[in-house]
Image (tube, rainbow, N blue to C red; front, side, top):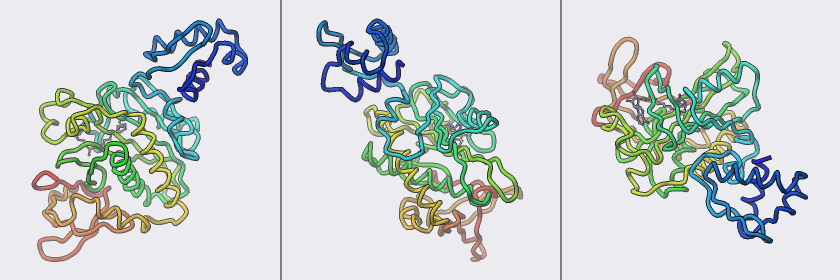
Length: 328
Ligand code: BTX
């Protein structure tokens, strides 16, 4: 009921809503309305209450309340269901546990803080409270398991476009799963899959974005390679708006991908946004490290590299980890 009241207040931002009006609409007593309003105030919502006029929302706190995010969304299924957590070990872990008992396609898990945020290969992902976007999009795509890594490219495009739209900043994609700004990592994507040889059961698309993190939020080691939108821009960014816009873009690219069955439709745009094309890279695989030059990305999402002897080779993100020689 508290969420219903918040929704009414958001949709009537320009006028006072009387206790009676809310009571008639929601079918609860005016005293109950008053109690819920007090709860919202405790959560940080600034609501003016004026006798004989009613309630008006003056300011919302910087928390990722699902009701507010849903009001900003323009999607058909992504984020129609949002699970909001104050603190969690990892939103991807939460998603996997949730999937044991089924879930609605497009459910998004959002946390204010991750205590054991994960990168690839068990690496740690720094996720301080209230500073970033730590979220997982849960999907049930009818695609082959070997196409799963292509969803990472879609997520990267969606983040890049969302940041451009909301923050007016140009970022770049470091294939396959990072977004970089001024040569430093601003976002990482971790796509995990549960499936069989021929079929995907579900995907967890984990997205971590350093939005309002300060330099002091990063470890000494990470600060050399990481940055945040706030550090670069100098001002705080509204995380809710950024989440909504990223999810809008994600649904748009993802739906087209499912219809067309390929990423061809977005590859020109994707390649224009790539930081590592034409750059020397180190491919780190199970057999050691190879020096190569990144030349292209295929519609299957594979990186095409030229080896020292001039031959071309296609690598998938599952096989290698790519490191730039001079930053990104
Ligand atoms: P990655 O393995 O490419 O990057 C991890 C590396 O990045 C770390 O070893 C560290 O050097 C550096 N790093 C750690 N934290 C940060 C940070 N906040 N910003 C920049 N660099 C950092 C990238 O893995 C994939 C990360 C996905 C994170 C999301 S958050 C929501 C979801 N839940 C979860 O546990 N992981 C994903």
